[in-house]
Amino acid sequence: NNWHTHKASVWDIVCELVSLAVKPRPRNPLAVNFTHLEDMALMHSTFCSAAIMSILSQVLRERPHRHDWLTMIDLQKLAGMHFLCFAAVAEEAVATQASPVHSPHVASSSQAHSRPSPPP
Image 1: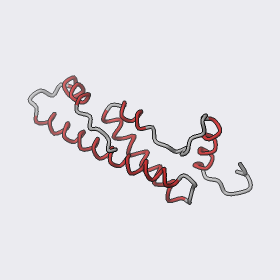
Image 2: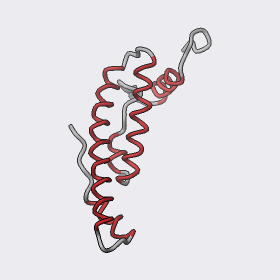
Image 3: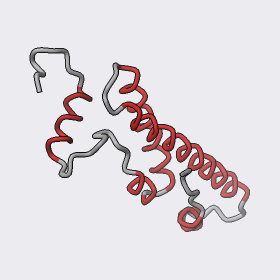
Image 4: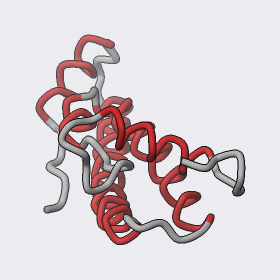
């Protein structure tokens, strides 16, 4: 675009590059890949979802973009997913502390089957 003639943010550049590189062109170049987040380990998903929420909130505060409503929908879904994951991590931490066995293997194996589902 005209990055040199008007004040462009890094998000404007990212959106344009994604729109040029991805075929078919995405409706929202800042769309969240929820499948990838769901496939991560619970702790990683919790931290990544918080980081992405922070970035998307910053993008929405910066100035209007044509895909803001799609970004807001993703942000709302991401917030729900984050707080479910955070609660599961907290429950797991309490269960691990209360357990007589403090084995890292026990904690990591329980993590795989206790993952909450994200909101629709």
